[in-house]
Length: 323
Ligand code: NAD
Ligand code: UDP
Image (cartoon, rainbow, N blue to C red; front, side, top):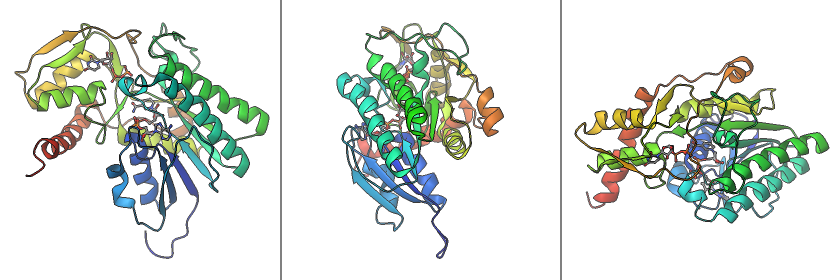
């Protein structure tokens, strides 16, 4: 930042050492803002925010959002929550606590200090949708007692809390329903489909389709997602607002795109489909277009290349640390 430039706001980023959180921290720091990054390092890593450690506008706090915290901040970007099924199912009760108590604590903080809070909610609030594509008005089809419920229902109650704090206490909230997002800094072993396929292909292993690979997802590149997040926080609309890339792909198509870039000879193998795995997912983004003038700019074909490059570097280092 050029010296003498005034700091605009103090930003708290919960989950700031994670995949999306660390890209958001970069964006805020590069804009000259003051940033407090809060994380318990369950799935986040210090290396993601290492470039900012020691910077005068940056602070790092090890803290679990299920416990209250007192801080003076203007903006709360509430991202803390494991996002990949294997991580959120590792301790489902803790995941539900993180969503409920974490959001409750952050809304309490927002109320106390008059901060605006953005909740990183999810397309999972639509469950296994019977309406396709999904507009924000769709209320979803979520199994309340299945293996994904800790996450899906956790995010649904987190959204409920946001709007009740707004109605009861006048807290300014922004609720963002994030659709599948990918890019550099996803954990190579977090089990999400983009990272799984890239890591498998780079290691020369078969790509694992769960089921027959006919289920669909819509993949948003991380820079587009962060742009949408910034616009939602800074705009006037509370949401809930879908932010995602409406280009829909079957999982088999994704596997074919990945192997074509790395090793077209690799086999695709079928494995059992996990319980309650949504069969289709694609956002309606009319609201984001109208209210934020936002739309994605990076196609899946374009976004895969830098993502593959970043995984190649991480795996080279992991597999050959001496090199
Ligand atoms: P991530 O797992 O990389 O990041 C989550 C971060 O939160 C990690 O740094 C983790 O250590 C931290 N965290 C988890 N529990 C915590 C707790 N109790 N206290 C403090 N920190 C805690 O996941 P991500 O992909 O960066 O997701 C960030 C947010 O966006 C999550 O809330 C997730 O639900 C939401 N989201 C992500 C996607 C996606 O495709 N990446 C899609 C929908 C929603
Ligand atoms: N998936 C797959 N192979 C994998 C990992 C995931 O076929 O190695 C499928 C998974 O069953 C789901 C889709 O890819 O249908 C997206 O999975 P992910 O966990 O990335 O996201 P989510 O299901 O939470 O949208």
